[in-house]
Image (cartoon, rainbow, N blue to C red; front, top):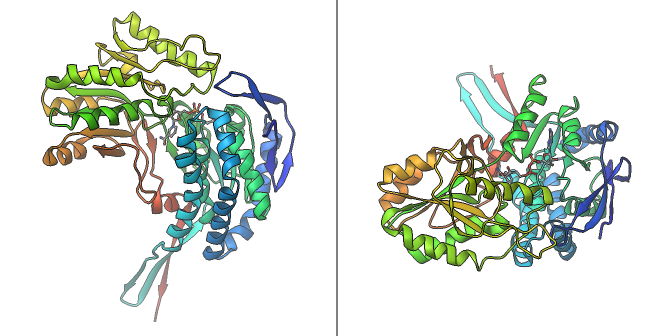
Length: 464
Ligand code: NAD
């Protein structure tokens, strides 16, 4: 499916621009040919979005919410196709794709239809004066997304942007164009007004043309911190709002009073899910000294059993392997893994656990984004918190303990946008999502998303 992918502009498919290949990471073989959107193609997409914006913004909220439900219905009608394209692009496990990634796409549209309908509106009465607030959409929003959860993250941004009355131009990752191409088909199938959703493909330069375009009123971006700061500079002169969900170097803290079976199983999930290619994955594991040896032995044994998902590209595999070389050079001890998977044509690396490196090692400070973690012992609780907070990132953290007081005490001291206690990766779509420090700016989720994708105007009226 989708051997050729064309841009989706003003409701039409536009096959323009130099073709580039997209590969199946399981086999390393080319599966699609996609077109690079140059500045001119991006310009046409932004113009299409601008042309569609006034009519879309003027629709009553209830009608936009109804469109969101039709998009969710359209996704469910093409469920099997979406699962197939997403797996072909990413090498994800079937189970995860069927139970999480694609259903979450439909759930994003349904949830934001509900959340928008229930959004409260403020009115304040002062003597002789009434002040109230209305929300207007930003206008045209640039949606730039990565490859690790392509459909889930794209819909996570599209749903609130659209229901708030914006039109959008989406730039999917060059590695994973398939589910976006299928979303374009779904938009056509349900008769979504042309120009409300536009999709352009290409590498970082295409994303650059999009965010720099003067017709863009805001940028929502999920991806690496480095790209986030490039985008911030690109929009600085025009002072456009940005919402950034960036990288992480997430810590897990395992206390001696933890339920060890649960902590081992949970840490295996949080390190190795999606081949470690989730921004929320754990890469630093701190374990209280009295249980360190047993935990390390059980974690290393469990790593041999985890699902092996390929890295997204040959380039990314090589980047992950370069961190293994670094750990070797710096005298790290490999408890398991440490190389590419022999005999595989796809982009596989072994699940890897390292210990014995200093905290200042790049292995412990930089996001690796692979099936890998570093283990280190700690003694008092304060030391664990200090180690977790020593990162320049602050996206997520996980605490494993059966102590109720400790759970709250530690969770509240961690410098992270999301903290899980005795679980991982569970989230209600209405809760704020995002990170502190280098992990991002702003929060999405629930009404936080609607706040980003709209501008309030306060109207104050004299009543006499
Ligand atoms: P990336 O930053 O390389 O690319 C993300 C997107 O930005 C792609 O579509 C890319 O083409 C585009 N892009 C690249 N350069 C650009 C530029 N100059 N201007 C505009 N767009 C540009 O990230 P990636 O490798 O695709 O994704 C992995 C990263 O995403 C990791 O750092 C991961 O932590 C992060 N991530 C964060 C979250 C979160 O919620 N915080 C979620 C998922 C992934």
